[in-house]
Image 1 (cartoon, one colour):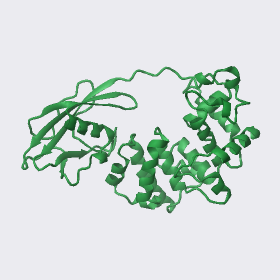
Image 2 (cartoon, one colour; image 1 turned 135 degrees about the horizontal axis):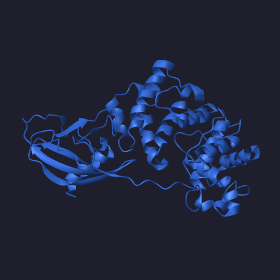
Image 3 (cartoon, rainbow, N blue to C red; image 1 turned 120 degrees about the horizontal axis):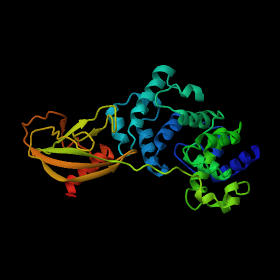
Image 4 (cartoon, one colour; image 1 turned 30 degrees about the vertical axis):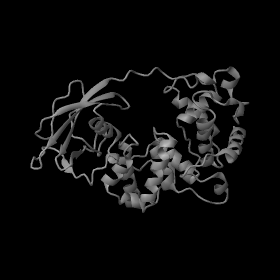
Length: 346
């Protein structure tokens, strides 16, 4: 097993991807240590999001908040606005909780072990393992979707996911070396992202080509096996886009709990089978069209209604935001889609 790890690390030394949060193998050997803050921030951003989508967000965050103390001191609204578009907004709320806990309870330094990291709010087993391995060189077992795919093919595991998670994690643990575990963790993820890809894996140039059982059996293309996906239900809702005659828009901050929690958005109804009317201000509302969005567990069909209201009309919910302060880019993707409907008429 140690031989397989050495082979992969040799490959990683030559082929490691360049990322703004990563310390290269060459720099690691020269003594440069990864910044736990940057490792943690990148791992939170990368949950259920692609590297390509995260790169610019990461650079903006670390330019604006270069340390965990800077992030802990940031206003909630500023962080939520900067996160807009990355999705899964509970991550942004937990990001702030974790940063503030690191500063308040740990003097601004992340705990240097998986066990210690697990005590922080918003850090689960995967993130704790990734930060412990990459930032502190603890031989923690790091298993994401890429690693599951690599292990399933390397050992020709046909047990479907998610049932196979425990089995694949045990196989990954057997390969995790005591030396350079952080580089090794990143190497397996790079292998899955660049060579052992979901479709058309490049087996001919894989450093683990010879020992890969799925390559020998000709089963790589069908692994990892997965249980059939459940059909997502469709929910409906209403978004009310009110514009005052001076150009100000009526917006509200959503409750901290629930989907899009803590985010700025249009006042609206509940989301369900038959949402009840819930206009935030007295007005002549007109249907502008429909915005569609897919969440993890359901599809949403959002009816968008618009109204132009006078200066002296007071809303029952929300606050009018002046044209100078209104930035559509600060809205989460769903709310931007609703705004786009009002402009396109689609």
